[in-house]
Length: 206
Image (cartoon, rainbow, N blue to C red; front, side):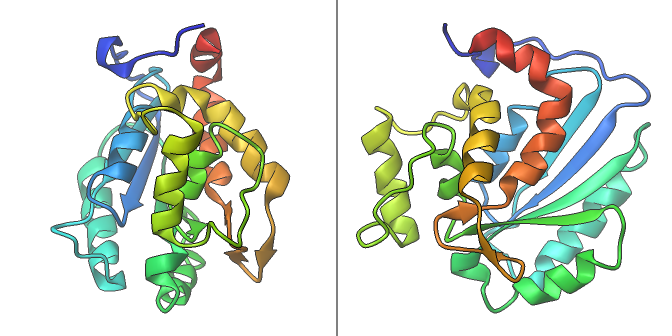
C-alpha cells in the first residue's frame, strides 16, 4: 500500500483541547522536517518542531529556544509537552546539563540517540542492528540508510512508518545510565506520544 505523502494531505483544524508537542531540535532541517510531518494530521495533536538558530546548539541556546517556544505556543488551547531531541555525537559533554534541567520540570523531556538522529530513521525500515565494527559514526549511519532504502529517508512520506520505528527501536534498546548504547535511540518515547493520536491515520497507509 502506498505511503501517505504529506504534501497532498489536508490538515485538520485543531480541537481546543489538542495536545501540543514542542520539539527542540539541535538540527536545522532533518529533525524539523521529520516532526513537521505529524503536525495536525489529527485535530487532537499539534507538533511544533523548533530548529536550531543558525547552527547554534549549545545548551544555553536550546534552553533559550525552549523558553521562547513555550511563550509563543503555550498560549494555544491544550496541554503541552516539551521535548529536547539530542545526539550523543555532538552532545556527550552537555547532555547532563539538559538532563538535569528537564528533571526539574514535569512538562519537559529528553530523547537521546546514539550517535545521531539517523539511528531513529533507520529503525523505520528494519529491526536488524548493523555491524558496529563498520557502522559507528554519524557519517556511517547517514550512508547506511540509502543502502537499505533506495533514495534514503523521505520526510514527506516515510514518517508514516512510525509504528514500525517504535517497535524496532524498543526491541533493541539498551542504555548505560540514561545514555543509549551505540546504535540505539530513546525517540520511541516521543514517538509513542505522537502515535497515540495518529495511529488510525498512519495505519491506513501500511
